[in-house]
Length: 388
Image (cartoon, rainbow, N blue to C red; front, side, top):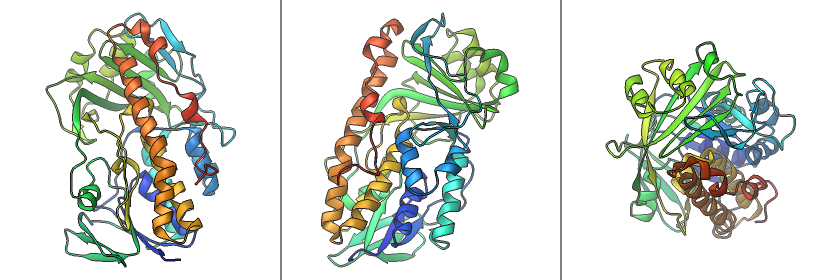
């Protein structure tokens, strides 16, 4: 095979999954992360069946299952009255998925730690911290990653998994992946179950649909924490990133017209642990690969969070890429098959996320059920068996 040493840029969910899948197939991998330490990110994460099938193929399903609360439904309700617009209540606070064809929710930091441990088991020295990518340089025979600390790493292939502000993308293609502000700001927080209890009597998972504002909540860590995500129209704040502080008063002001249960949850959100970020949208890319370098996850297809698919599509990418490289010794053919298998699906998911955003953000919440995006085709996908 002509592509044995693979440089991976970024140690997020996609980068770690990719490294594990490749290392298990005999590739030499090095994972370069810009952060000097991998800290806990207090966010909930949806892990649907499409991701579970990948974890099963990697031999990790039982471990992921044990940190996941099974999802049996989500109720979409009117933001003021609480009237049900679509769906059913999910009361499974502690039940784990029974099979690989069932998904649920988990704590992002727990899944990240699990993947990190799995990588260290299969490739103990693969992870390198404190390496911020500066440039990707390649010739017909090799690809080189140059880092801001002056270090240089050569390999046969490079995979850019460095998120929506991908340095790998800019360096590989010589341009920015243009983005536009959606006039929506996301706010997240975690609330201890004992504080949230009076405001969650109608099930584990619920989404309040309002004109230009939405509020979702669900339990993680066997129901000990309530993960809250709010999406609100707001044109005055435009910073990307996960960890910009948001005050409780600012949060309450945005949602002052919402159901009392939402206001009760926000009032009990720990001050100092509420964060916000601006949502930017990119158009799907027609090409992810140039020469010996390709993209994966948000670097290739950053999508809006309205369908909770961002981590999942990165996990799918990772496994399909490993399959393609393992099955096709010629890297040009392998990367071409990877793109052909993944670009149509991820582009469709990006468009579906936009459709779901329009359904959730419309002026009349009562029209949600008629305008919601189609989730069925997305859920049936299997990255382990999909044609290459």
